[in-house]
Length: 346
Image 1 (cartoon, rainbow, N blue to C red):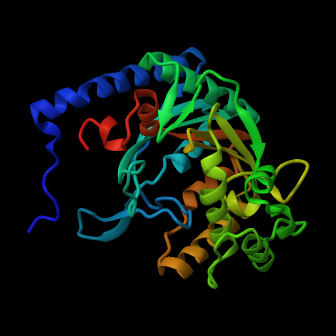
Image 2 (cartoon, helix red, strand yellow):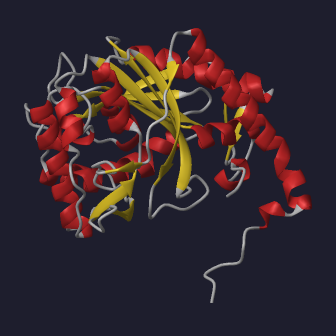
Image 3 (tube, one colour):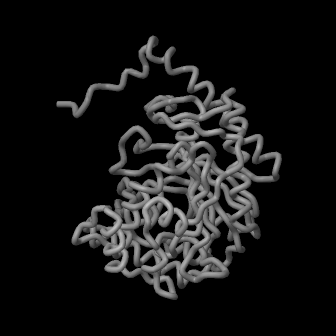
């Protein structure tokens, strides 16, 4: 028995209803490519089949088996992001690059999630991560222009894609929207105190489970209190994440507890994630191992670390990089309510 009925996207009447958004997607794609080309970025293509799919605790990969000519077998994964490959290209000598990469993430489904989707990733060598904020603002406006709209809307919330971005730190957002001092739970070196955060969050009326780790509590506050308040009436930049929530980014120059990481929100939707990139292979290994230890504890599995990626980090220049959910951007620009509405073949 089939798990579900076939998708009817191929029916002529269904396709005609869907087609205007798909055509708009093409215009947005062309505009984004032209924008990057005009700024001397090179478009790259990264292979999807990898030794490691990425090492974030809560990301789940699709696994497969590579069989050699002699019948030897080895595990491979479809990448959850092209990040490792892009950083290898920075180590190889590229200085400005972007990619529209098809990526795969398991255990994800819903109005904003699809197991196969497109990430727009771009990297600037020798540039501060604030430069990516300016890039993101330009891309948001570009998508609106290509779609022929002056306003984004989603689930009853509206956003002016041409308005100056609101910029708020994680510490400010926790205090403003949850009444929690997140910095009080961080030691001078960035180590997180779970008991302290649990007590403060419980006092603020937010549920905490007995087996929650610090990261679990942090994420719940973000989802329940912070995200709904962001991205309306203007796009929001949520920046300066605790180092415990930024496994691939470097520490800020003025506070070792914090990382050069920001997320972009529009209409309450997380649209992009950006870093001042970590280039210390020793610290990077420790952080990836920590992420996989947490994954083993929570899900009973872990993914290998890409040793070639760590070797390349030693040769990578200082850089900043961003990943933007391209399908979500098209959704917002075309007024779609579900991600399938902007995928040619969902």
